[in-house]
Each structure stands twice: as C-alpha cells, then as structure tokens.
Image 1 (cartoon, helix red, strand yellow):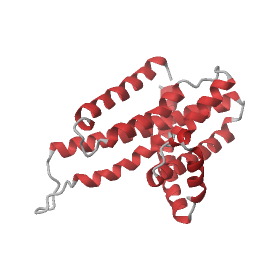
Image 2 (image 1 turned 90 degrees about the horizontal axis):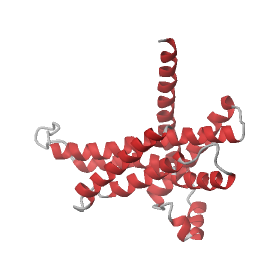
Image 3 (image 1 turned 90 degrees about the vertical axis):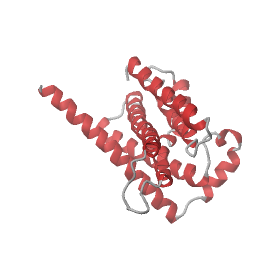
Length: 223
C-alpha cells in the first residue's frame, strides 16, 4: 500500500475513534465498547503497514507474531453487529420500522466500524500472506490459498476466544499461564461449529474482495 493511502486509512480510523469518543464514549453511551473494539481492530492493520519484504528477520518475525495475536480483533468487530438487537427499530403498534435518526446513527456507527475493520483486516491478511510468499520464495498458486485458510482458521478461533472467553490479546502479556490453560480447555464440538461459522464469513468476505479486485484489474487491462 502506498504511503498516501496508508495515511488516508490511518487518519480515517483516528477520526472515527475521536468521533466515537466525543459523541458516545464520553457520554457513557450503550455503544461505548465501540471505541475499544475499533482500536483493537485497527492495530493489526497498522502493524501490517510496517511489514515489508525489506525488513530484517528480527523485525519481520516480531511484528508478524504481534500481527497474528491482534489480527482476530479485526473480524471480531463483525460480532458487534449483534448489538443491533438493542436498537428495537420496529413500532410495537404498527409493526413497521420507525424513522428515528438517532437509531440510524447508532446503526451507522456499528456498521461503519464492522466494515472498516473487517475489510481493512482482509487487506492486512492479504498483505502479510504476500510478504511471506516473497520472503520464503513460495509459489503463489499453491501456498497463498493454504496460508489464507490457515490464518483465517486461527483468526476464527481468536474470535471465539475474544467473544466467549472474554480474553483480550493483552492478557497474554500479563498472565500467559492462565491464558494458555483457558485455551487448552476451551475445545468442544459447539466451539468448533462456531469457528466454522466465522471461518465461512471471513472466506466469503475475502473471496468477494479478491474476485472483485481480480475482475476489475482484468477490465482495466482491456480498456
């Protein structure tokens, strides 16, 4: 990603978080969690911007581990959409959706965070995958889909950990032994089904973005 686009993404996220802080968080609103979740979802995007093929081994491996730990926070924001249930948009008398601008503002805030974090999270996933292919001189046709699948499965497990075990990435640095214990005992058939659901959502998102970009690039070549 070109530097100017990196700054566009960076300033857009910063502006959104300042807006959420000023209008929601500072007022102790119901959706105050949106500030922290958006910030955590943005961290892997920022980390990915600093990982390039020219970086040293120490820099690459340390930043890659950090990215891997924080990346699940990006698709995790999609699960915040369940909080739309608190909006109660329907009129109990008529059964029709009410034209309430405050309701639609909350809808816009939740959806904006979810779209931005998940879409730019997919960019970071693609970027990291491409960097790995370049550094280790791997064939794109076979290894890229394999890496995407593996990293997406890991992210899906991370979403479960964050949503249901309520384990934030930072806990690994403060109480790693307890975190490891929780990760060992969490496995169950129901957990795996949830992981499969999150995996499907992310793969559909990645596939839609990949196909769209591929088809547009081909169209530009023929113009």
